[in-house]
Image 1 (cartoon, rainbow, N blue to C red):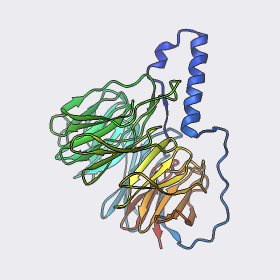
Image 2: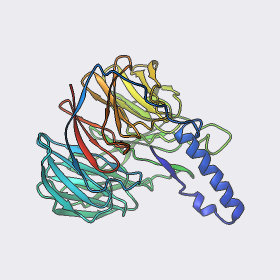
Image 3: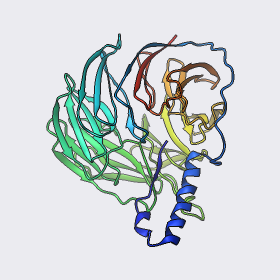
Image 4: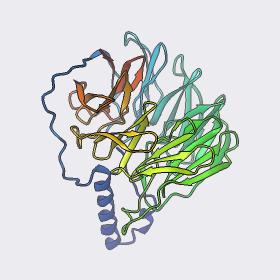
Length: 395
């Protein structure tokens, strides 16, 4: 879930009337993000006889988690090791098979995003406007680079470059070896924007990233020059809230097509070669999406309803609302299923072909699962907001 970042509105607070108007606007945006009716309660879980079992292989504690903040802390997995971090800078390396801690490090950083594995390095973004690389072997600091603002997005790596997006709308590329800047692209943010956890997508020689006013851009990876800009959604509405459209979820690529979505942005298919719009489907305040098969895209909307959509034209294939308003994560594909986490620490397993609920696991006893579960060789790695890291087998 992402929350309001009133970047420009702070400049308008000249008195009580302006302050009250801003509070009303912020409340309206929060209602939009949390669903059409902010007072609508989450659906209670109904009894379920699982037809597919999920079992915990191991758990370990990673510091104190996110400490109640909206961050982008996710586990990173290699063939042998799982890496995870908390907001106060604790980083752990855990043996993937057994869950035994290989090393732990107190970095002293205020980590906001990551870790991401890049060769012999782990990469992080921080709340103090830093991009940081530490050693994969023992957590020792390798380099640290100053950014222009907080980094909530995950760093992306290709061709020895690290691409980072900061909360002020800037995208920059840095040398993976020493952290020196290679290029920077600055864009104008709309007056109101969402505090996004979305990250750039690297595909071949392109950097793909969406932002406000329904726009998606493609930059050249080597020099940052603009290749094309597409307006996937034209903002419409009578109020500022209704006109807010941000393609802030990670762009997805399959073949020569880019799929883009975000807050009030619906789902758009865009030609990767030239930025032309192929089709657009309006889905109820879509917040996240991920391409999980050759035929379908799976979406969690802001009401926590899960959709399957045809990848060729965006037509609905099925919709599952049994977990309505339970603040679900982005869905992850594991075997022939989708898995999502919710605000009470449950994992839910659904069939990818029809959306039926086939499994459930209470992982953390009411500690929310906010980070997208990560699947590696049919095992799920899940990090809760309180820092519990778990490996879960789908049987």
